[in-house]
Length: 222
Image (cartoon, helix red, strand yellow):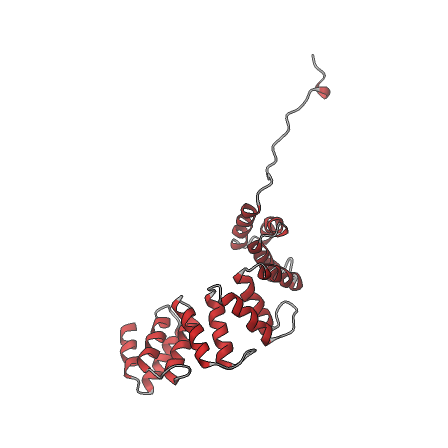
């Protein structure tokens, strides 16, 4: 009888075999969306270390949102890594960090506008709306109503509610575009149809100001 101690034993398969970065990322993102930050970080960390930009972005979100591992400076560093790889969500988030002074950075309107523009040019609707506002108010960039309308339009056409309201205001006041009450109402109504209460209040205000198209829009929304 063979000595059990000297008998070769089968090697057990790992329950967590090495995954490729994309698989690690998808697993981590899934746990993030479920609110399980511990498991999310476990998988996202592996993918992020392999240079996966989306994983870096979501890992940053974990460090910014979870009180258990809260580390805003680390979150910012991860956002920056992802943004410099061209990740639009990370670029937009960096813009917000500079706008509001989040993640331990000082407010910087110029840097905010730069990052919003990078994300906007990739089609990020939130960034397009925010860049439009930068141009509209001259925040961190030269005031330019026409460019504001251009970016609000791009964002609004993608369904961004804030941009739809902003574009409606531009048409109503004639900022960067010829004044057009009907188009103003049209865009604000589109926002209202998405359930935005502020848009509906704007229509009520336009109705009080005597804009007949707003009166008809409110009837359609009933």
